[in-house]
Amino acid sequence: MRILGIDPGLQTTGFGVVDCDGPHLRYVASGTIRTTRLALGDLPGRIKILYDGVREVAGRYQPDSSAVEIIFVNVNPQSTLLLGQARGACITALVSAELPVAEYTAVQMKRAVAGHGRAAKPQVQEMVQRLLQLPGTPGPDAADALGIAITHAHAGHTLAQIAQATPLARRQHAMLRGGRAL
Image (cartoon, rainbow, N blue to C red; front, side):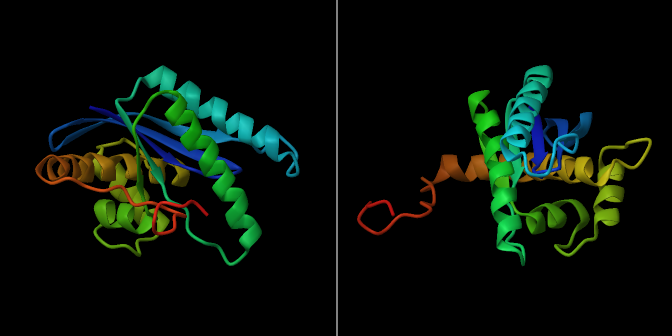
């Protein structure tokens, strides 16, 4: 199974592609999609670059599934909203490419890759390099994206087995009891 991991960011979005055969992982590709050539105020232009970039990566590497990092709430609410829009563009691109999308927090990824949820970026980079037997350390955004793909490779298989054994209900966000949307 080929997995595309995405670490969304408004200025730099990391991507990582790994092949998973049971417990064996193989590096395919990684990199970043940068929107820094546009003015900071050009949000629609940046969103378009992210959408097109993720679609291009998905088209080039033909993954079977994808995983995206769940954003955290920043101290600055405006930054959180902007990052959420970048994440939405990435998820929309993956869904429009007809890929299933899994979501993991940074803490879940750090636990899966480095063994603890408070690992620093250099620790994640080094562990991704070791796990995928890379000749060099990937950049921080690409390493996070590869970490998300690795997390899905490990957790996705287990979650699929659990789903087959018991029915899982998808958590409904922004819903009131009784099925009325907010």
